[in-house]
Image (cartoon, rainbow, N blue to C red; front, side, top):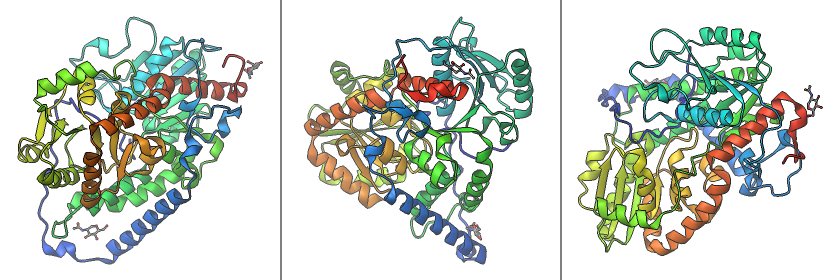
Length: 505
Ligand SMILES: *[C@@H]1O[C@H](CO)[C@@H](O)[C@H](O)[C@H]1NC(C)=O
Ligand SMILES: *[C@@H]1O[C@H](CO)[C@@H](O)[C@H](O)[C@H]1NC(C)=O
């Protein structure tokens, strides 16, 4: 089946097998001539960019998404993310739900990608709260320890693997398996991770909730940013050019088929707004639930910070230590950071950049000299030390699809952030100027921002970090995410649970 959106809001930092980008082929000069088609596409792209800009200029202030301490009413009309609700993990759910899950992927390696990790964490948490979760997914890749398939010895989540070629998703067959299980005892609710359940089948499932981990409108915006960082004499990569041109049609396609899904979960506030305002999905069918990160794994630890700095060789007289993590590729903004950092250290010799991750940009960073500390792929167990050891976390991403978990992990560790000014980040992450800095994705803006960060110094940055943690603890934890989904699922099963607060709240 077609995959219309990139399903992985990346972080595959300790990923062993990084696929190197295909080397750019130099195109002949003829490719730079405008054809009528490319003009049309350009006009459409500019139009969409304008719509996006207007949309975000006219949108309400960040206050709209802040914690609704006194909210009461029907949650389907909530203007804020459901993570904001003070739902208590201690009270048991009022009923045990039978939940069906379509997930193209289920963790099949030690370091799973974003979407499958989300699916695994969420549904393991729901199962541990007594819900009967059935997962329908691709055939397992061979040689993977079975402990990775399920959360443990417990009966749920029960994983139904397809048979056949490992990793190959065949939606029709999964739907047949689902229907058999549904005949035995009907599912209370059904959850699809992105387009795992194709819209052809979605129409037949009235109690379906789909979570969008990135939509085509965001991919289009990402394409615009990526092309804008191309140097004037740099030829456009033909396959990138093609996908950029095609992305407008993907948006149109999505707008037409998204309505086949009954209920939608937007994983950022801005995606929620696009779904209602551009995709024209009625507001009461769009719910915002941010993905969360494990608060047990990420927390402040000053001792650990100190020892890790020694371990990786940060000099004692370092003024400010910047950190970046993830795949070191173009669409994560590394061409920008590389140039900005090179410029920064000409006037700030005591500023350091710690890099966790691998990719084509790694060697270029290393060539900048001793101000760069490249750690390569970092084991997940070292991530907490990494976030604690740096003064500020940088995420120069050009991809607005989904929200990178890295920045949330940093904030939970009490580290402020410097992030690209994307609608999703502005409305869901850096909702307060105290949390850090945002910059337009170009070298000049990033360089200027980094100069501001360095001028502030580590003490002021630490103060910002404390504010980050206060916010992250309330809004960005995996526990909050699971509770928000549970409430939404209850509300889809029985309208009476859509009211808030109820006597068990
Ligand atoms: C880019 O795509 C347009 C159509 O969208 C095409 O007309 C143009 O020739 C392409 N340019 C290159 C360099 O591939
Ligand atoms: C919904 O829940 C309420 C209260 O918990 C219950 O009285 C009602 O029968 C339920 N409705 C359905 C259709 O299950």
